[in-house]
Structure formats: structure tokens, C-alpha cells
Image (tube, rainbow, N blue to C red; front, side, top):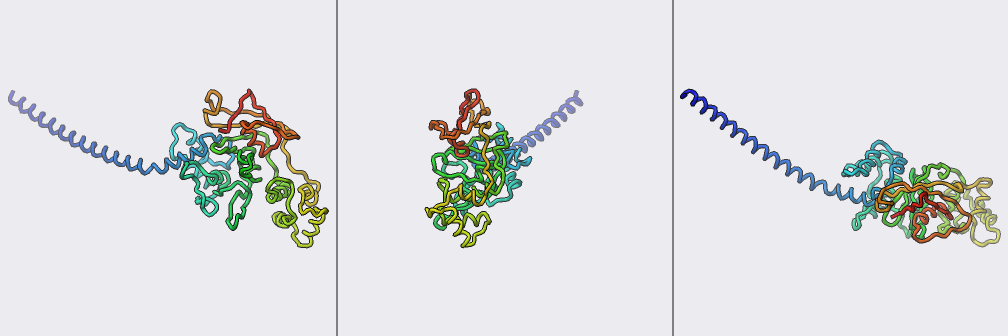
Amino acid sequence: MSARGKSMSARGKSMSARGKSMSARGKSMSARGKSRSARGRSVSAGGKPAVRAFKAWLCLVSSQVCAVAWLCLDSSQVCAVAWLCLVSSQVCAVAWLCLVSSQGATKGSPCLGGGDGGSEPLISGEEGHGEQSLLNLLITGTPSSHVFDGANDLGGMKLLGVWRRPSVGLLHLQEHYRQLRVGWYLKNPLHPVWLCASQHHITVVFSLQRELVCPASEIERGHQVFSWYDTEGNGFIQQSQLMPVLQHLGLCTDEQFVKFMCEELDPDNMGVILYHKFQDAFFSGEQLHTAPDTFTLFHYNGLPASNPEKKVQYAKGFVTRQESHVQFSSVQDLTACLSTKWPNIELQWEDNFKPSMN
């Protein structure tokens, strides 16, 4: 019994030593847990700016820009990953990085300071939503602050707009109310996809009919440049503006030739040159591109509250172009926005579904 007692006593000491060892390991693991917790707090604190930036981006697109629009942005696999991150229920800041990386890969590496000398930020500091410069950055690759073509000079200040046709276009409701004017480039993208912007929200309109895409031609270029100087859309320019129009088109600008053309185009010496006379003189026999008399559009609004039964879905609309002016109520914001691209249209939506821009 004495030998057994000694053996049990030795085992007890051994178990006691193991307990102390396990206790030491527990303290070590506890210390590691505290260290990881401290690291987690550090990472969380460091991640807040990225989260705020990403939330600002979400305020811009409001989860409503559909996959069709982004796939038309000369997209890469990185852009597809960004889209999946955006619409996923587990949205993370990685989406923002993917979008910036995709933009750099597909559009080049722009200056992110904003257009017009960096006077306008990409994200509003007060309201937290994306500015026009951020939208232009994603559409065209250049963070310009305006929607007109090229650049305008305002009292010595150079205002930058859009310099080329993008893959996806933009229509703006504020143009209907004459608060701004969207240029030819944004209205005539390379694909029949347009972002439709209201004051606080962006939706998407697209079509499967390629006939809506304006082809590149000399007469279309002539009409575009003429419209730069016909700022009110009245169909005429001043005589003094003929020379800069010809310069932009790469045509003869000899002083005697310009004087002769002014006399030919304005025989009554009224001081103005009508567009149809300008077209007949420089683009005789050519015709401007016109949209089909009837075509189909699809509209997408990613906000559940703006859809029937709060279920996000596409709306299918049938457009008919009319010869005379079409009246519509002030609540038909989407029709008003589309009329800035296709004037005098009637729009009927399938299943009496009336989509909203809000």
C-alpha cells in the first residue's frame, strides 16, 4: 500500500504540474487574444475613412446602376468583380478599390484631383454624395466638372467638359428645365445605354436597338460643332461665329472665303446664318441621323421603394416619335428627361408600370 501511495502521490504531482502548464498556456492565449483585439481595433479605426468613402459612392449610385451599363464601360473582369461587390448584401470597401482599379485599367490613369484645376472634389464634403466630376470620371475617365462638349471660357476661367464619345451616355432632367445643357458626346454614346440623372438619383435607360446609336459622319460632326455656338438651340449662329465653326471642322478659313460664304448664307444681311443653309452649303446631299419612328426602351431603378411591391424590376416602354409638340404632366420626370434626347415622344409602359426617376 505504501508503494501504491507513493505512486499516486507522484501522479498527483505530475497532474499538478500539467495544470500549471495549462494555466500558463491559458494566460499566453489570453495575452494573444488581447493583442489581436488591440490589432482589430487598430484596423477598424484605420478602415473608417475607406468605409466613409465607400458610403459616399453608394450615395452616388444608390445601388441602381445595372450590370448592362457597367458592362458597356469597356469592362474588364475587375469591373465585374466591383459590380458584384456593389450589389452584394455583404458590401465592403473592396468594391471601391475595384472600381478605381477598373477605371484605371479601362480608361487610363487620370488625375483624381477633379477638373477645372481641382476646384471641385469628387465627393461632396457637406452632403456626402458624388459630384458630377466623379460621374464623368467613371463614364469618360476624366474627372471634369461639366456635361458640355470640350471646354468653355468664362471670364478667363477654363471650364472643362467632355472630350469624346463615351461607351455609356448621360441624360439630365435639369436640361428639361433649362438649368444646364448636356453636350453631344454624352447624348450620343457608342452603345444605346444612358444614365438618367435627376437632382438626387440616377437610373438607367437602355435599348436593344442599335439604330439608336448615331454613326460617326462628317455631317454629324458639322451639326455638333454648329450646336456649340447655337447655345440656345434656335437653329442659327451669328455671322462672326462662322470662322471658328469652320476652324473646328478643318475647313477653309481664308478671310475672303469666309466673307463670301457669309454673303451666300445671309443674302439679306440679317447678321445670322441658319443651320439648314449651312448644311446645304457644306454637306450637300448628306442627311443627319434620326432615330426610328418607334423603338423600345428598358428602364432600371435599383431602389426597391420606387418599384411595385418594393421589388426591383425592369420596366419596358414603347416610344413613338411625333411630328408635333407633345404635352406631358410635370410628374412625368422620366419622359421629360428622355425628351432632351428625343423631342416630341409619347411613351407607353408595359403592364401600366410607371417607372420613377426617384
